[in-house]
Image (cartoon, rainbow, N blue to C red; front, side):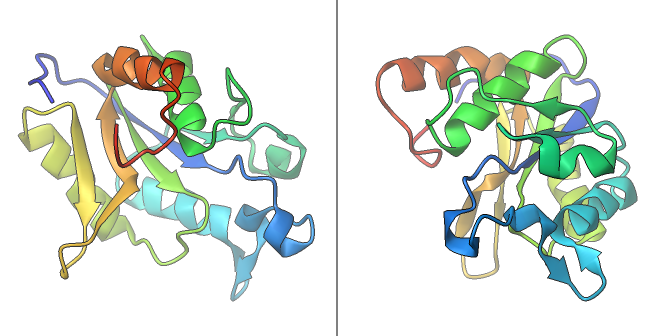
Length: 167
């Protein structure tokens, strides 16, 4: 990746565009961990990390309307999480320099972990910062992406690439 030049505000996005096939039609983000939905936990983590402008990436916004957030549908439905990344980067262009993405099925993320990821992005010069666990496993959907990466994401989708980890 090439270095970025500007540092500006970071917005947040929860990737919740799945078809809920494995959960009998129930959107994963609405599943409960204790008394809280997974999306509710993600929104709390974002708030605790100082990221208050958060959107939800979903093609069916109805289940998520209760959270009072902007719902961003894919520009090209059916392309998986990378399609959601493209849509959010495009929707937030001019509103934020970068977007911190979280998948909707990551109920254990903490505000401290998210804050560390955002800080790593802010301190670096690359177009993205990816979460890596202690065992060196990296999580390509738990990432901060600069808006300047939008053309590369769109180009990858144009070329048939759907794997987030490859882009």
